[in-house]
Structure formats: C-alpha cells, structure tokens
Amino acid sequence: MTYDRYVAICQPLHYDTIMNSRACVQMATGAWISGILYSVLHTGNTFALTFFGGNMVDQFFCEIRQLLKLTCSDSYLSEVGVIAFSVCLVLGCFVFIIVSYVQIFKSVLRIPSVQGRHKAISTCLPHLTVVSLFVCTCIFAYLKPTSSSTSALDLVVAVLYSVLPPIVNPIIYRMRNKEIKAALKRLTGCR
Image (cartoon, rainbow, N blue to C red; front, side, top):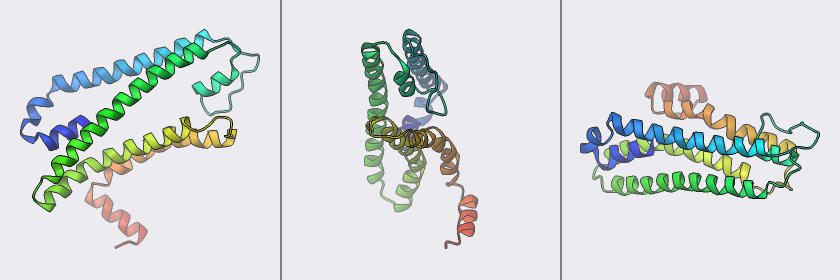
C-alpha cells in the first residue's frame, strides 16, 4: 500500500505502467511468501519444544511468548533464530515504509498549490494512521519487560494489538468519505 501511494504521488504519470497487474501479483506473492515463512518458522519451533505438565496459557489465544513460559527445554537458539528472522522482516518493512513516506512528503512539499498538498496528504494519512496504530501497539506488547507485567495487562495489550487495528482500519479509511464525516460531526455535535 505504501508503494502504491508512493507511485501515485511521486510518479503520477507512470502510475499505470508501474502499478500494473504483474506488479500487484509480485507484491501480493512477496507478502504471502514472507507470511508463510514466518508462520512455518514459528510452528516448527513450537513443535520442537517440550512442555511441562500444565497447558494453561494466560492469554486469549496461543501466543508464542506465553508458550515459551510453559516450555521445559532450552529454546535459546531457536528463539534467537526466530527473533533474528522477525527483526529482519519487520525492519525491512518498516524501513521501506519510512523511506517511501519520506519520498512522498518531499514530493508533497514541492506541490505548489495548497489544495494539491492537502489532497496528497489526505491520500496518505489513513494508511499512515493504521500502520502507526499497529506498530505502536505491537511495540508496547513486545518490547516491554516480561517480568514487570501482570497477566491482566498482557491480556489487555493482546486485545489492543490484535483487535483494535482491524476494527479501526475501516473507520479510518471511511473518514475520507464526506457523508461519514458529516454524520460524525452531527453525532458528536462538532462544527
């Protein structure tokens, strides 16, 4: 989605030739392959672990961090491999998004008309909002110290990063619709 916005704003005359069906299939295939590799890596590492007698996970779903608390085998090397792959995948996507948006905002600042700048920014803002919301909740969930967090806090954080972005996603993308904006203003009483 970031690349689509980048091409639409930075190279608008070449949009149809760059964002053809072949490019879309390649991007979708890349996303699917990286997701499948990530899933297979986690699943393989989970099946390689041996667990204690208990099978109670303090979570709404079987999350990797909660499973690692139940294991009795030394999983240091497999955890390092999973973390290294995860960091490479996440940092690669994050750097790509940041570089694309820097290029987009550089192009937007060169647009002479205020209306043109506003239109370009309003095209990017929903995607940037959704990505920021997801990244911030994941950072809060995974980069906090595990020893200092309670299980209730872990449950709330899990709900935040797994439920909140998908719920807010359609709302944010619909905010561009003028009728929805007008209805929300009437509902909240804002002018």
